[in-house]
Amino acid sequence: MVISTVASNPIRKRPAAPRARRMLGRALIYAALLLWTFICLFPIYWTVTTSFKSAVDVTQAHLIPWVDFQPDWKGWRSLGLSPDTLFGTSTARSEFMNRFVNSIITSVGASLLALVLGSLAAYGLSRFRYKFAWMRNDDILFFFMSQLILPPVVLALPFLVLYKALALLDTTFGLILLYTLTVLPIVIWIMRDQFNAIPIELDEAAFVDGLSTWGAFLRIILPLAVPGMVAAFILSLVLCWNEYFFAALLTSTDAKTLPVMVASQTGSQGINWWSMAALSTAAIAPLVVVGIFLERYIVSGLTTGAGK
Image 1: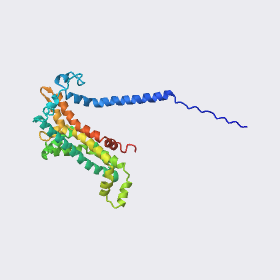
Image 2: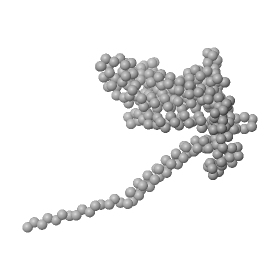
Image 3: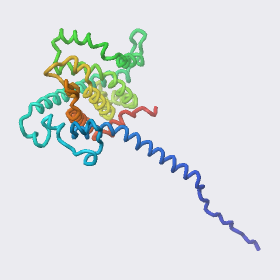
Image 4: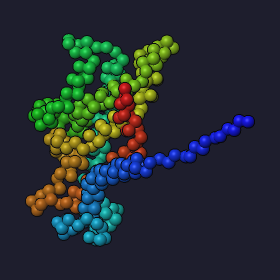
């Protein structure tokens, strides 16, 4: 008679120490992320709250509304954007709207133009092989990116003389051209990585189906590169929107943008911090809204090709 015995296998419990270390590591990561979030968002909080402060609250560095200070519409009233002045006639509001429209026209126009030119250049660098003297594709890309090394002050006098000769001073068209040159290298860099991530077999299949190079680019490749295009457009828009040096140098009255108007809130009596904060809040609000709605495109476009 054979007696079989089945050994019982008790369930092993995981050691408590490794689990505690993992929870501690996760807690430290979340704490670091919360600290970094606070550091990034505090300037925005400071700017928004300062737009509702009076002179005394600004000088005494009061932070928390309704606790340290009573919010006031003084900063927004100086722009004609407070509830009691919004529907009346205001010279300050008219000036703000003109500067706001100028910023939109120059930023959007330059970003779109840079996106068109940059996408064409990036597609060529991604799909074709060029030889210009000793330069190859990577050398040409580096040449474009090297233009960002030049400090703007070096180009100030040449552009001032050139724009005066071409009658482009104080024009939105002149700013669009200049901003396009400024952000074009970044657009080429992002879009080249985007096109490199798209298999070249799609181009070859399009050629087999009878499409030309332009047809393959416009009908097959370009729709697949939308995330990168959105990322490049938003990054260009932010850079153009916040540009101050050339806007202050090449404009005087008609084509001034919001950054120039923000910087002009200084006078012989000091800095009007409440007005500057209200202007800054109104200036960053559109970019915040755009960033929130297009965040997934920005992340996917900027991370394309990162794992290659």
